[in-house]
Image 1 (cartoon, helix red, strand yellow):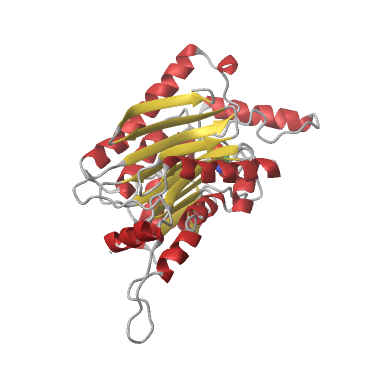
Image 2 (cartoon, protein in one colour):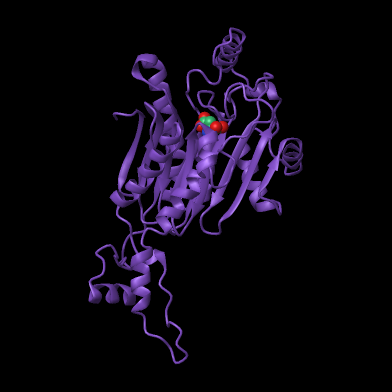
Length: 366
Ligand code: ASP
């Protein structure tokens, strides 16, 4: 039917954006990852630390690329990436997550499958080594989408996932950041995440079957209290995937991402990007004897160019910035776009696809 629409579109010269995918096209795959955005600048980085971050990002990227290259599912790829980064103490997820005000670690994570729009998320877990895998279990093994705190910890045990003492997640650098924050607070200074480095991790992927998926995992913000929950585990805010549009994982000041429902907003804007063209194409579809259309035109008939996707993604991040929010997103679409947008000086990130060699970057000018 795609050919029918393309024919109709061509005949009516309505758009140059509708592109038929030849049946013989090699299946494409894409993977984009992030390790957080923020005030990440060359001046504040040692060569050793920079090299170490790049090596870590490359390793995580390869963990996901291996899955996709071999024809595996986007869902498996994003989980594989995030598990690697959760174990890496340099990022604010799993081991190395930031401390709460009380000096404990409480993780948030979410995963979403664009093929089914199935989703799973957890918040405030304290003992699961890989919160992203727990989120996936919530999606696949429970009747729910979102579990919190003790209940999520209990479900994790029941699922037989690896448990570790909360201290296992602690690192001296994160302790120092909390102490610094508390000292500033004691002086009456603004204390909240003073260095504005969000080390949340995430991945989005397109697999060879045309499915997209997204995963995000974090410790939240340094010194979070009163049960604060950020955007990362909230489906539609920091994490979203829909095969009809895209997959998104965010990092940044979670409160703003929640208010704009950033991940869903990007997907929705992409999904309805061709609303007028779809309406016009639908109007040209022949009707059956009862006056009903013989074919329903779908948004997936239209292939967005990378530039069009980028425009939408940048637009949502600009809107975030206009509210005062900082951070960024990574995005993958079923058409093969892989990219990102952020309004902070840097974002730890990496990208690889069937057409493009693996590359990692840190600063905004790379
Ligand atoms: N977005 C996360 C949160 O607000 C923080 C981060 O990106 O590091 O919890």
